[in-house]
Image (cartoon, rainbow, N blue to C red):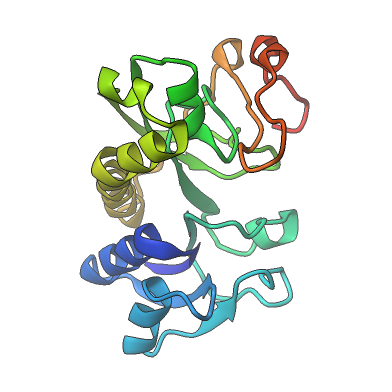
Length: 217
């Protein structure tokens, strides 16, 4: 199976390594040129690199079966989504449809969720709204709820949700490469969307009461 990966950091590296181990032909990656994880591994295998922030239908590599996002902040537009024969999958560190949005782990901590998880899903026009392929769950250690949310989220990602994502991606890649395609629509009755916590004055309790409904998904 021919794949293209848009990602960065340790998770991007692990997904690239996974694809190589499973015998995928990696046609290219999109990542920051200075990334010491996925970019370094791509160069080791002479895999073409598209600089982060420049991925589009015009720069996307052709002849790809599956696109994969792995901690990617590049927007995958409509024309770009249609280039891979099978579409794109991505990993989101929450039990979708709960906690859509960039700061999913931190919001699970802030909202005192006892349980969270990870989801491999198919990208569509909405933010984290595509059909679900695979999910797994984990308890959130109560000790994390009394820590500073960003530090707690980083710990939960590093220790639990990153390895979970690699495992789920491995299952997805193995199945898709053999023709097993799973697509389960998200149940919007249980959806939430929270904004990035990197913007000023983000914690507004009224936001927690709004359902994440949209015609874009």
